[in-house]
Amino acid sequence: MDDLQLLIDLHVVAARQGPGGDAQTHLAIELSGLRNGRDLAIADIGCGTGASTLVLASELDAKIIAVDFLPEFLDALKLRAAQAGLADRITTETASMDSLPFTPGTLDAIWSEGAIYNIGFEKGVQDWRRLLKPGGIIAVSELTWLTESRPAELEVHWQSEYPEVDTASSKMAVLERNGFTPLGYFALPEHCWLDDYYRPMQKRFPVFLDAHKSSDAAKALVSAEEHEIDLYERHRQYVSYGYYIARKTDDRS
Image (cartoon, rainbow, N blue to C red; front, side, top):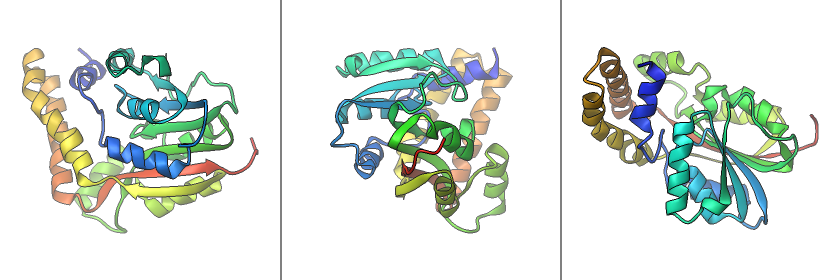
């Protein structure tokens, strides 16, 4: 079994595939100014099993297009949407972030919680901007340094995993130079990492290992996740996801 299938098996049963929380999605909605919009078109890109998708669909007068390249995640989302009575507000698209099925200038907002790193923050901001209507909203959570300096082992780890990790001020500058006006920013609190993501994942490890007969690949995946958890627990004051909300400012292509 390849590494991607192992990742799917570990995460497809989870409510979240990364740090986050419903309250934080609610806050981003308030900062976005979308609350009073009507008949909105919103794409939730890299939606996973739909934690943010379900909040958007329940809180806004909108059709949500949930996009992920893994059909297994989208199948789980559709089941959750049906159980929540929100299936009529959500459609799904199996697509890669670098080949999105949207006509330029047709979206009121683009959402992406913990997923833009797959193509990089600046590339995502640049590529997705053209899909937004004038004045459209982008709301993304992104790995962010909380301090100007941090322990070497933490920096080495995250620079290896995601070289675009940076401070909030640098991320704001990316938004500004790419035709967006920042509307709001906040860092995810610790419980979004520990209670909403890491602890539930740790509880799944024994079942996951048993299902894969404790193969070397399965054990390596669990070990890598445990290493990341350990780093966060010891250095949580230095890193989090920053949530960035911004508005498209002009009509340049």
